[in-house]
Image 1 (cartoon, rainbow, N blue to C red):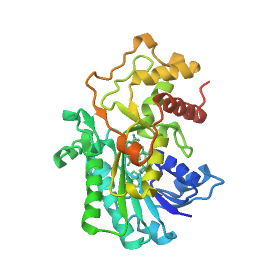
Image 2: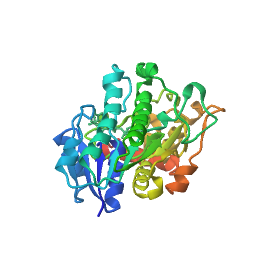
Image 3: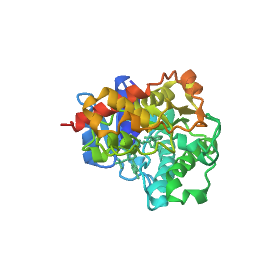
Length: 334
Ligand code: NDP
């Protein structure tokens, strides 16, 4: 039996957890409080799961407790990183937890976890795309040219946190030559079923917000613009990507750009109208909406993820239907 620890308890982490448990792994997760840890354990019952409280990854040595209190791990997955909208303090809210959290985890593994063979980090397409001057086609060789000055702009802080934390991870591997290797998942904007351990829709992860808002009727007057992101991936594909990146020997030392396809808010609304007639009145009429994907939209090359990780991507329709259903399961529409 392989033992794995997932650093983080959010949306993507919950699907990685399901995927690892289904594959027969023994898993531990880190959560920021006892309450969150217990909620996650309950959400996977009767499957066994342990948790470790790591309240703030920005603090030096935050992850040490996970490796000192738990049995030896074979693999580590790092998904904990702030992802929300409208930050006020870019350094405190994004850069410190993302960069110090990643560096601290690498150091903790090197110091306390000699059995670990591989670390998989959830980076982002944010570390790949250059919105100021889009490439025609993006792949894993592309890096966002974000500067430290831009990192101080609240609107660019999230992107910068992903660029600088991923760079810090590769630099650590290069310089420290630790006992483990690294694989990175650069997923694009993620849709998919919300996690079962969610106490309410208010606690929902950021990238599913537009689907939630459509379900709640908040875009009835008009759909919000789709920009700036026009590509999506289903969270279950992202979870499988992490599992395969963890276990396939040839995945080590690689980044994987994980993208399912293009999307627009109109396409999402059209899927909801067709599959959930009871929500029709919460959306604008189909004839009143336009597809706002630009003609010169950037393209993506996901062949490495398909060839090395064997991913087959879920359609937008399936992803949206399952997301909406998971929202209705938590809060039924009368
Ligand atoms: P969530 O917000 O659901 O998950 C983020 C997780 O990070 C939460 O468990 C959160 O804990 C934890 N976290 C944040 N800050 C801290 C901190 N200071 N100390 C400890 N834990 C912290 O979002 P996702 O699941 O969507 O995101 C997970 C990862 O995936 C992130 O690295 C994100 O950048 C990346 N990603 C996400 C994409 C998306 O579209 N969803 C796209 C590309 C990459 P808590 O909730 O308790 O605060």
